[in-house]
Amino acid sequence: MSFALTRESFFWHRVHSLTGIVPIGFYILQHLTLNSFSLAGPAKFDGVIGFFESVPKHVLLAAEVLLIWTPLLFHALYGLFIANRSKPNYFGSRYNWSQNLMYVLQRWSGIALFFFLTYHVISTTVHKYATNDPRVIEYAAWQTKLTENGYLLLAVYALGVLAASYHLSYGIWNFCIRWGITVSDRSQAAVQRFSAVAFVAITLLGWAALAGFLMH
Image (cartoon, rainbow, N blue to C red):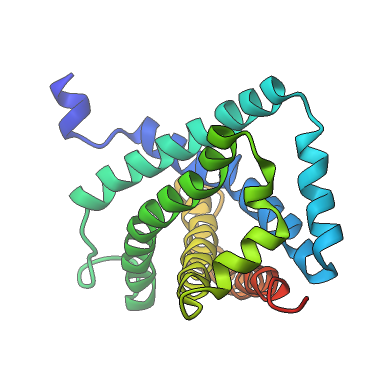
């Protein structure tokens, strides 16, 4: 037990990187895509909410716990463990300065995401189940939340999207290395470029979803 708590496990490292892509990465893309229905107006966005609310509650809750919350909680807690024990190596490493910088930003974005997602889940999903009222996550509620108090929460969510998109995009690069998909420097550089494009695309998708709540 003491070994498991004080030494990073190769197996759990791989599981950690895998959960960051499947199911968490897939869920983030799906979540932001569905949220972008805000661009089409309240009726379309609330229609998405209505679709999920039409699923039997016990089925929806079980799916959320097993497919989203459990892997997300593991990924977050083990990620904090890694961030606490690991340090970047700018010198004497096969990785260049930019890759080490990506590593540092990955760790800090993960820590920021832990607090952001804790607030987000409590104020949305937990609030919905506690009050048994899906209106707390409908378009009107989001519009009010994001525009009150000088758009403070809009700024928080914009930064949250930025952190999530970076963490996922860099995670793709890290996943490919950890799972032996990219071995050569050339292949790693290619995935690094792909990750940069993915970062921009996912960020714009998330920001577009937020902008949708200001347009109607």
